[in-house]
Image (cartoon, rainbow, N blue to C red):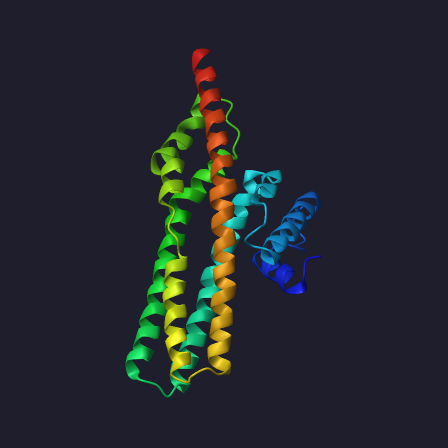
Amino acid sequence: MTNHWSYQQAKSRFDSCLGGQSLHLAKETEMSGFVRLLATAFDDVDSFSYEKFNAFDLHLLTEYVSSTHKLYINKSLQEIEQWSEHCMRNMVVQENLKSQLHTAVRKFKVDTIEHIQEEESTLLPYLRLLNCDYNRLADYDSFWIEKSKCDLTKFHDEHEDEHLGLQEIDNIIGQLCKAGQRNFLIGMLEKKIKTFCTDLQIHGNIEEMVIIPKAVETERKLIQKYHKLLSKN
């Protein structure tokens, strides 16, 4: 049974949509099902079968990525930075450790936002185009333009692991604890990092195991359809 924390963690990225009056009932029901499945992934991130997400269409999966990006930028990264600043202001420790923590958190935030912006400018526009209907050759004009910007196979192969930055922050926290600085603030920062690390792992697995393979197959079918239309002209 999914615990309350897991459900809230999964639901948080869709709060602006779930229960919205403008959202069609069938779509809200589908999204609620997605949230429940996502919550089970938070319950058991390492052994969860991510192929279960294949039951959802590419449109909803794309909106999941977009909503998660907004959650990261507007909440998760801000909270990590805020709690690290609280720690630095209240710690009695060597300045070099404070400086290392500040630098690591700042670099991780900047790198993660750059990664998100890259996906928002190339991957997501292309995924949204893959959801469109193409019944005429002229319909493919924008498709070819966006396809030239987004190589799905290359994206999969070069998908960066954002966990490395979090690991560096965690290592610095370990040094602070050894220096006798374990307290409520450090504990909260550790909790925020652990939660975000889990979220990143799930997010990356869904992108790599579900979204990209589904997008590649959709792309293949659309190109096949294009050649059929071309042969009729």
